[in-house]
Length: 146
Image (cartoon, rainbow, N blue to C red):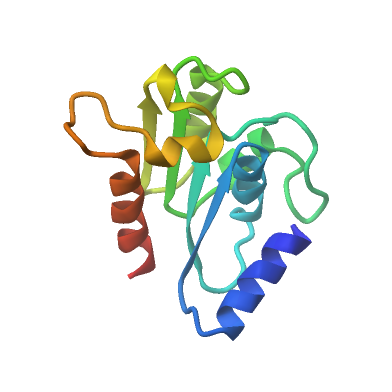
Protein backbone atom coordinates (compact mmCIF):
# COMPACT_ATOMS: atom_id res chain seq x y z
CA UNK A 1 0.00 0.00 0.00
CA UNK A 2 2.91 2.31 0.70
CA UNK A 3 4.13 1.90 -2.90
CA UNK A 4 0.70 2.77 -4.28
CA UNK A 5 0.37 5.79 -1.99
CA UNK A 6 3.89 6.84 -3.00
CA UNK A 7 3.12 6.57 -6.71
CA UNK A 8 -0.09 8.57 -6.30
CA UNK A 9 1.78 11.19 -4.28
CA UNK A 10 4.40 11.50 -7.01
CA UNK A 11 1.76 11.83 -9.72
CA UNK A 12 0.01 14.57 -7.72
CA UNK A 13 3.35 16.33 -7.16
CA UNK A 14 3.93 16.20 -10.93
CA UNK A 15 0.58 17.86 -11.58
CA UNK A 16 -1.98 15.07 -11.94
CA UNK A 17 -5.31 16.12 -10.49
CA UNK A 18 -7.18 12.87 -11.15
CA UNK A 19 -5.71 9.39 -11.02
CA UNK A 20 -7.06 5.89 -11.60
CA UNK A 21 -5.46 2.91 -9.93
CA UNK A 22 -4.75 0.18 -12.48
CA UNK A 23 -3.38 -3.19 -11.51
CA UNK A 24 -3.01 -6.61 -13.09
CA UNK A 25 -2.79 -10.05 -11.54
CA UNK A 26 -1.83 -9.67 -7.86
CA UNK A 27 -1.46 -5.95 -8.58
CA UNK A 28 -5.16 -5.87 -9.45
CA UNK A 29 -5.97 -7.16 -5.98
CA UNK A 30 -3.56 -4.69 -4.40
CA UNK A 31 -5.10 -1.80 -6.37
CA UNK A 32 -8.57 -2.94 -5.25
CA UNK A 33 -7.47 -2.95 -1.62
CA UNK A 34 -5.86 0.49 -1.94
CA UNK A 35 -9.00 1.86 -3.62
CA UNK A 36 -10.99 1.27 -0.44
CA UNK A 37 -9.05 4.13 1.19
CA UNK A 38 -8.13 6.16 -1.88
CA UNK A 39 -5.55 8.91 -1.59
CA UNK A 40 -6.70 12.38 -2.69
CA UNK A 41 -7.23 12.57 -6.44
CA UNK A 42 -7.87 8.85 -6.99
CA UNK A 43 -11.13 8.60 -8.91
CA UNK A 44 -11.33 5.04 -10.25
CA UNK A 45 -10.03 1.48 -10.31
CA UNK A 46 -9.20 -0.98 -13.06
CA UNK A 47 -8.51 -4.54 -11.90
CA UNK A 48 -7.22 -6.88 -14.63
CA UNK A 49 -7.24 -10.58 -13.71
CA UNK A 50 -7.15 -9.72 -10.00
CA UNK A 51 -5.86 -12.90 -8.39
CA UNK A 52 -4.62 -14.01 -4.97
CA UNK A 53 -7.95 -12.64 -3.74
CA UNK A 54 -7.81 -14.45 -0.40
CA UNK A 55 -4.09 -13.86 0.23
CA UNK A 56 -3.37 -11.26 2.93
CA UNK A 57 -1.81 -8.39 0.97
CA UNK A 58 -2.31 -5.45 3.33
CA UNK A 59 -2.57 -4.45 6.96
CA UNK A 60 -4.79 -2.02 8.83
CA UNK A 61 -6.25 0.40 8.08
CA UNK A 62 -6.82 -1.45 4.78
CA UNK A 63 -8.77 -4.69 4.38
CA UNK A 64 -6.30 -7.60 4.38
CA UNK A 65 -7.57 -9.29 1.21
CA UNK A 66 -9.16 -8.34 -2.09
CA UNK A 67 -12.21 -10.39 -1.18
CA UNK A 68 -12.54 -8.42 2.06
CA UNK A 69 -11.95 -5.15 0.24
CA UNK A 70 -14.64 -5.53 -2.41
CA UNK A 71 -17.60 -4.60 -0.15
CA UNK A 72 -15.73 -1.43 0.89
CA UNK A 73 -15.11 -0.27 -2.68
CA UNK A 74 -17.01 2.89 -3.58
CA UNK A 75 -14.94 4.21 -6.50
CA UNK A 76 -16.00 3.58 -10.10
CA UNK A 77 -14.47 0.24 -11.08
CA UNK A 78 -13.72 -1.83 -14.16
CA UNK A 79 -13.04 -5.53 -13.60
CA UNK A 80 -11.79 -7.82 -16.36
CA UNK A 81 -10.85 -11.48 -16.64
CA UNK A 82 -10.39 -13.99 -19.43
CA UNK A 83 -12.57 -17.07 -19.55
CA UNK A 84 -10.45 -20.00 -18.46
CA UNK A 85 -7.78 -17.83 -16.77
CA UNK A 86 -5.44 -20.27 -15.05
CA UNK A 87 -4.85 -18.00 -12.03
CA UNK A 88 -8.30 -16.57 -11.24
CA UNK A 89 -11.72 -17.81 -12.24
CA UNK A 90 -14.54 -15.89 -13.84
CA UNK A 91 -16.62 -16.97 -10.83
CA UNK A 92 -14.16 -15.39 -8.38
CA UNK A 93 -14.02 -12.20 -10.45
CA UNK A 94 -17.82 -12.06 -10.61
CA UNK A 95 -17.76 -12.42 -6.82
CA UNK A 96 -15.48 -9.40 -6.40
CA UNK A 97 -17.60 -7.44 -8.86
CA UNK A 98 -20.83 -8.40 -7.11
CA UNK A 99 -19.53 -7.43 -3.68
CA UNK A 100 -18.22 -4.03 -4.83
CA UNK A 101 -20.43 -1.16 -3.70
CA UNK A 102 -19.42 1.12 -6.56
CA UNK A 103 -22.32 2.94 -8.19
CA UNK A 104 -20.41 2.82 -11.48
CA UNK A 105 -18.89 -0.57 -12.19
CA UNK A 106 -18.40 -2.88 -15.12
CA UNK A 107 -17.27 -6.47 -15.56
CA UNK A 108 -15.79 -7.64 -18.86
CA UNK A 109 -15.18 -11.34 -19.49
CA UNK A 110 -12.82 -11.79 -22.41
CA UNK A 111 -12.15 -14.89 -24.52
CA UNK A 112 -9.86 -17.55 -23.04
CA UNK A 113 -7.20 -16.68 -25.62
CA UNK A 114 -6.88 -13.20 -24.03
CA UNK A 115 -4.38 -14.36 -21.43
CA UNK A 116 -3.86 -13.01 -17.93
CA UNK A 117 -3.12 -9.63 -16.41
CA UNK A 118 -1.68 -7.01 -18.73
CA UNK A 119 -2.26 -9.34 -21.71
CA UNK A 120 -5.95 -8.40 -21.50
CA UNK A 121 -5.25 -4.86 -22.66
CA UNK A 122 -4.59 -5.99 -26.23
CA UNK A 123 -7.40 -8.57 -26.34
CA UNK A 124 -9.84 -8.26 -29.22
CA UNK A 125 -13.47 -8.21 -28.18
CA UNK A 126 -15.66 -11.03 -29.47
CA UNK A 127 -17.91 -9.96 -32.33
CA UNK A 128 -16.21 -6.57 -32.56
CA UNK A 129 -14.03 -6.30 -35.60
CA UNK A 130 -10.67 -4.72 -34.73
CA UNK A 131 -11.92 -3.35 -31.41
CA UNK A 132 -9.70 -4.11 -28.47
CA UNK A 133 -10.34 -4.13 -24.76
CA UNK A 134 -7.99 -1.13 -24.65
CA UNK A 135 -10.85 0.90 -26.17
CA UNK A 136 -13.03 0.06 -23.15
CA UNK A 137 -10.18 0.98 -20.82
CA UNK A 138 -9.73 4.36 -22.56
CA UNK A 139 -13.47 5.08 -22.33
CA UNK A 140 -13.55 4.15 -18.65
CA UNK A 141 -10.50 6.30 -17.87
CA UNK A 142 -11.99 9.26 -19.75
CA UNK A 143 -15.16 8.91 -17.69
CA UNK A 144 -13.53 8.66 -14.27
CA UNK A 145 -10.72 11.16 -14.74
CA UNK A 146 -12.56 14.03 -16.43
